[in-house]
Amino acid sequence: VQETFARLIEARDRYRGDAPFRVYLFTIARNVLYSHLRSRYRIEATFDIIETDDSIADMTGRRHSSLLAEREEHRLLLDALRQLKLSYQELLELYYWQNLTGQELAELFGVVEATIRSRLRQAVSALRTRYQEMAAMPHHKDIEEEQVRAWLEELGLMLEQQKQAPRPSDHPRAG
Image 1 (cartoon, one colour):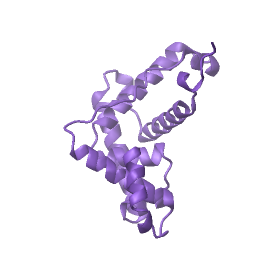
Image 2 (image 1 turned 180 degrees about the vertical axis):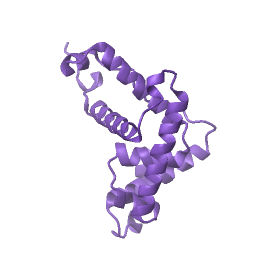
Image 3 (image 1 turned 90 degrees about the vertical axis):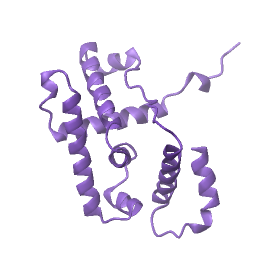
């Protein structure tokens, strides 16, 4: 993040306003990411979907077994996502988790929106295929692409909630 903003400051005079600033920022972030990945041998996953607070289950009114099954599906989906080629990962994350529109993605990648829609379909299909290959339980074998999309959206909401949740360090201890 720090490197992205440093490069943004360096490149501030090059922003022409042709595209939304958000697209410009994501382009810089994307370039920083690629630079970082080129300098490393492997990617380390830092997001652990299994960790949740039991009070979430209480608030939703669902049984713990249902939540565990859902978390297992999400974990499996994240594992499958990590095994896709980087361009698919990036596209799915920007669309489902960063809420960029098809038009914004088209501007970001320098292609027409129809190409983005096609690539999104290919990415979801590849994710579905990879998920099914990894799934050990028979009921996981017959998922539809629409279910994969729904899980991606759920994960996006969970990520957003995780970002907004206060951290223990945000609250000074009394004493």
